[in-house]
Length: 85
View 1 (cartoon, one colour):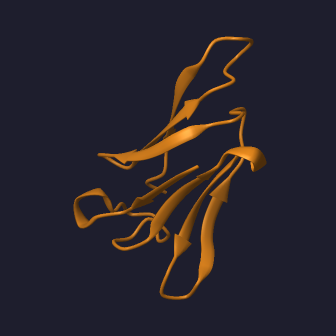
View 2 (cartoon, one colour):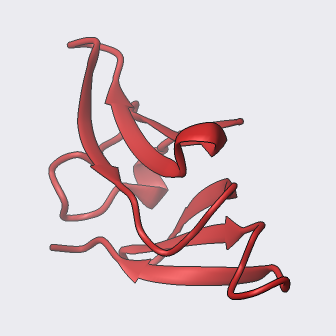
């Protein structure tokens, strides 16, 4: 449900999160992934406690924010992950 091109200012040390890659949210799979258009391959993905998530965002320094629409119980929330490794 979301596509974001990773720009130079948001690329991080992680090899998948490089300039030009596409960060995507697949709501019905409860997954977030990075797609490399040059190789047409998924280079990174994650599933976690989030459900029906939206709008993942890379933010400095090497963090990923995910809007968890289902949340813990009935409340929505924003989760933060370290992706600098």
